[in-house]
Figure (cartoon, rainbow, N blue to C red):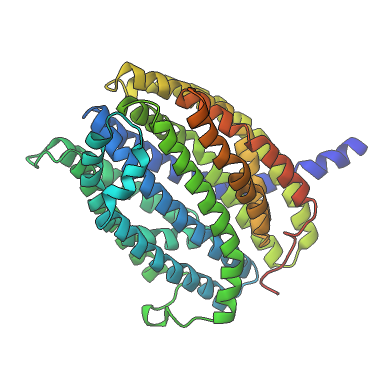
Length: 462
């Protein structure tokens, strides 16, 4: 009998996991298709050589920073969106959408300044000490200027897609994103190499294809919400009818997420720049191509965080706090099992390296293989810690991210990477391994923090 009680504490019913899978799988499939397209993009660009691929990839790091910023804004608003959905509070859901929109508009201005006004000074920070820095920057500037036009359509699509997922409507973002991804792949083929009579634009062609795909994606999302009218939808002229008390409450909690996430992404950007200084274009292209492949199994993070956020957020929003406590254990157990499954998937993707990136130099391919294998081995702890963060944020406990991620980044991660860069001669792969060992203490700190149950809150009622 005791064994059955223990099992019920840590393992949910088949029906519960079916519901979690129903939420997680479409999100993961959407991300998988987008990342497959990104991998195909990288494959096409890699045919242009290490230097041109390096230029696109250091620009991609800037785009990555913006995407994390945008997704963090949506996560902050999404905490309230999910709970208001559970409480069936239409006005609250609309206020969450307004919050996302207002803050994201500010992010767009900053993004366009970086891409169109100060691209070279900003991008040069990514290739300090790289032996081929100037050649890489020449290619990067061509690409990043055009990517400035992607900001607004990406913002609109991300806000609508995240709001649909947070209210449990996961299929429309999947379908729309798949269509946009296929469009992107087609126009990459047309413009990078000049097929179907189009001019051969190389890195500019990759950027142009992205612009076309993102604009079409935005139009499809707008048409969808105009037809279906989900409850969070507001008319354009009422978009700024803001409840400032609620806005500031979301900003207060969301600011914590923004602080921890931006610290994380800044530390990732710094570490990437320091890795890039360990050689020439073969290091930049080898490291970046490894992430293009790793993104195929990194979809696990989106799946586990979305399922955890939606299930716990809606349960808390209904005021069923005891049920939320049980569901937390069930979801964390699932994260452990899922992490090991994705580790095996990740190890198998090593065999893609010579197929996809066979045109890169042998040195770049070696770095890529070693990195992919290493990242696969880290999947169990990474999936688990993502689930821990999703639990805390579901109830509005955003302080955990500041303590676990923010303090760790400031006190340990950034000083350690500079020490490795300037006091050792280690290669980029070994530097990466040492840096990621820090994630194990983070799991322990998060475990202790979650036991305090600061996340067990009904924000909709409050």
